[in-house]
Length: 292
Image 1 (cartoon, rainbow, N blue to C red):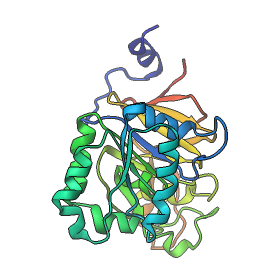
Image 2: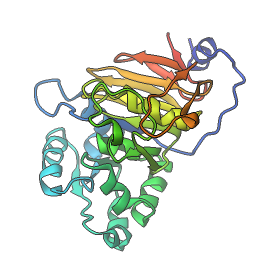
Image 3: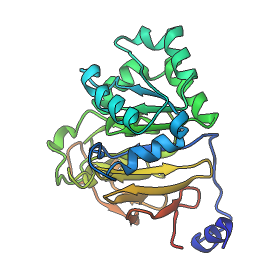
Image 4: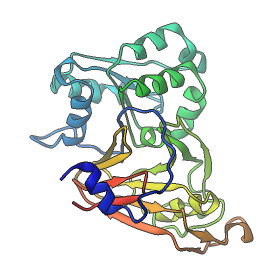
């Protein structure tokens, strides 16, 4: 059975309008991906395969970390071990570094770009709106795979959460409250989508719900640790790794967000929840799972 046939069967409304961005593969990872052990590197191996396998020229972007050398070294080791042709590091310590010719040239030669974890705020402050960001977007549009883990997973989407959980304190098991997090612009490789990471491990459903309650229509993707999604040019999402992916569709949802004071618990109704295990697929255009 063809893919088109599968999509037709799984979509409730075949004529649902959709807006596409010209993109190559995008691979958000929930953090904590396996780097050791026999056969345990499924997520990183898929990234390498998409980047060209033995011919892959990987650029690691550790900008989110305050210790970029320590953050990048495990990825240099694992991608080299898996057989990449080259692994180089994009060294951005100040914002002007991200506007340099050397930075752009390094990204232009990459067949795979991997953004590490750390602090989302550093990625925004040092990379958002720079020539490096624009080069990453152009390379992805040309078909180069862009992956991000933990904080790096958040930045690939059109919006990302910043500032922790604010008034709600620790995000673990927190209720959805108005003003929990701040929503800022990401790289925009994925439109109308927000990505959260360490999802089950840190109990982040509340903060995810609070974000799309304030921004109706977003599709929210929560990634467990050692779990990733690969999203192709056609908007088909595939789950990889050992955990689950939680998807919340806010297209038909309503809430009392704008009737509440900052810090108050929110009511959200008519949201649509999907939980997908490894190997499952989802059509981002129709916002429906592909159960075949």
